[in-house]
Length: 150
Image (tube, helix red, strand yellow):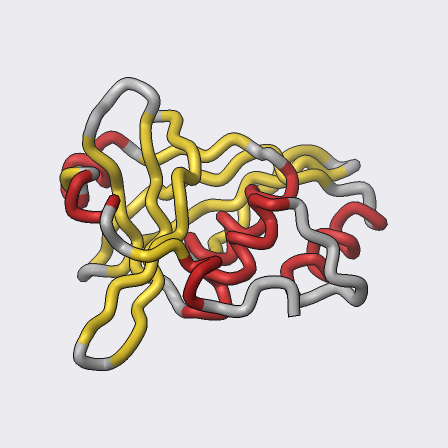
């Protein structure tokens, strides 16, 4: 199913701030939350805002290298849930054709946020992880917690 990156939120846990990327389908009130690391959460938020901070960060650098070599991010598919770990496939169009690369969802979504590439979630993965949007709407936006733009 097609989804959009709705937001990157932060839950306060006993271990500290825990970023969550919220994936939302157009045709469902529920969402798929994926818990990620702070660095990737900030990177996804920067990509969503198309914020240029000067020197490239890791995801910007990877995208620059990929594009210089003639590649283009086509889509990201969150394809599996394996022992509470989400698995994603990064679909890249290259001069030699399409290639699929196993990648963490957070890294894949950071690239998708920078390129407006399509994001998909396998139906069974969404069903296994779906949550009520209301559980996450009151959480802080990562931009309010982390210093974005520094």
